[in-house]
Length: 58
Image 1 (cartoon, rainbow, N blue to C red):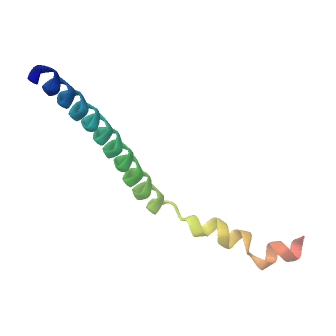
Image 2: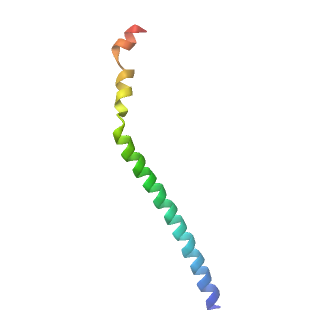
């Protein structure tokens, strides 16, 4: 009986480890995306979009 309870506990821990690894990889990917976005000037396109010369030309 103890053998099956140990096996069940092992399987639960194995699942928790797998989900923790998955969560870690997602967080690492988000951190990488955040770092890469710092290099791109996101406000530039907004400034060009709101440029009055473009609006007047229309």
